[in-house]
Length: 114
Image 1 (cartoon, rainbow, N blue to C red):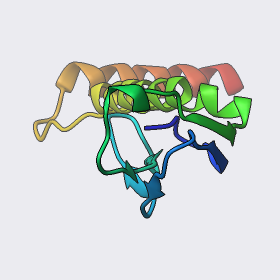
Image 2: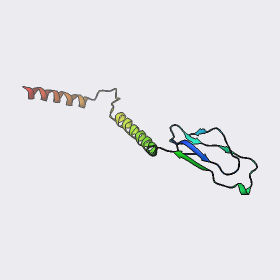
Image 3: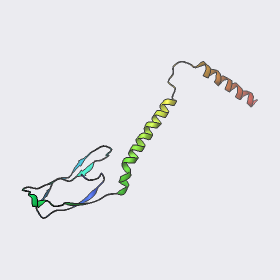
Image 4: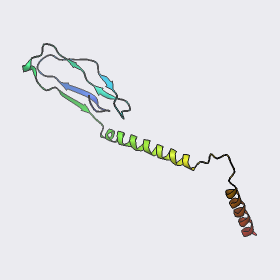
């Protein structure tokens, strides 16, 4: 399993025969388009076949910021939604004190403009 956004795979195989199967994508938490998975198969392996398989790939370093930015934007959207919801007035009844304050404010503005 390689990092999300990795591409251009180059594999250096050991001295024995290894078959590479089709690449797959695996999605984990906070992934947007999945992590590439390289699958290899071999048969008749013994203890002396234990060797490293080297995989080279290209990775854009800006992709390191993808998950933190995703979480930050999600929290910002949640907070903005809560702020807007708290400020909305869903009351059906009329608040007489508020109405009186608005009338006094309106009369004060009219007196001021005279």
